[in-house]
Amino acid sequence: MTINLNGRLALVTGASRGIGYFLSLELAKRGAHVIAVARTVGGLEELDDNIKALGGSATLVPLDLTDMAGIDRLGGSIHERWGKLDILVANAGVLGTISPIGHVEAKTFEKVMTVNVTGTWRLIRSVDPLLRQSDAGRAILLSSGVAHSARAFWAPYAASKAAIEVMARSWADETKAMKLRVNSVNPGATRTAMRAQAMPGEDPETLPHPQEVAEKIVALADPALNVTGKLFDVRENRFLDYCMPG
Ligand code: NDP
Image 1 (tube, helix red, strand yellow):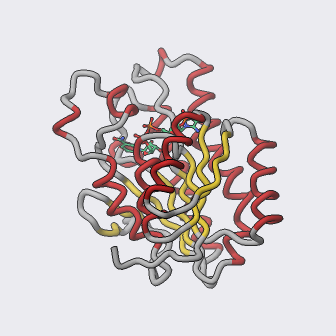
Image 2: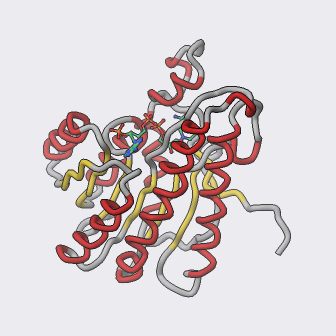
Image 3: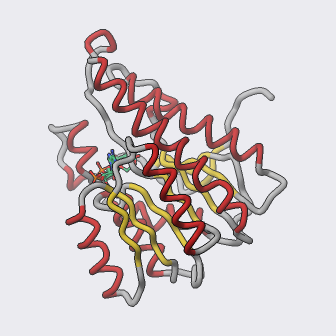
């Protein structure tokens, strides 16, 4: 709990449940005002109650991340109200279906790409100028181990996460001379609705709780962090180097 986020403004997508919900709480615990984005108003309201109980504050934004104009308006609203953003957590995501690549329905593939890739890019575009206004802008993008392990039957989701990581690295390279730090995260298997959808036969009690995972990810919001363009592995609790040339 040594990170002090007092006076910092954090935007978290997928804040209505799972990792995004607990990461929002961890950010609020450390003093950040949380702009919580998701579609499910009930989940956002429950988060708001819990943040208030901690003495923190939040702004709730019910938004579907397939609504690209809505994402643009969100950046505009943050600009008008605060003029900057300190922390972006691009966490919202969908799994699609686990099936052989030839059996994936077009609408499923498109949904995964729209929410996970296009929605994330559109959000980056919307808030990049605001993060550059911060004296310690931090962007945290949720990836997955399958971006690297390329597991059978996970093609759309795995491709979307690989795209997120490459976007994060490109963005980090563009901004490396600035105060903005951009990193991806592999949370590892975590006890959430998405994991239960992916692995219905698995006992959720064998997996880390999202709060435990969020407590590690919150380190990437530290204003003192001096790492950019890397992948943070929650299980190993450290940054990994990308082993690619040039
Ligand atoms: P959950 O399914 O529990 O939560 C996903 C969140 O994304 C929800 O808050 C949901 O909110 C939001 N979301 C989904 N679609 C949309 C949309 N169209 N518009 C706005 N918000 C949306 O997932 P997890 O917490 O498990 O996953 C969080 C991140 O971590 C994801 O990016 C996932 O890929 C990644 N990850 C998770 C792992 C795990 O084992 N759990 C492992 C590796 C990576 P709502 O439905 O209210 O809109």
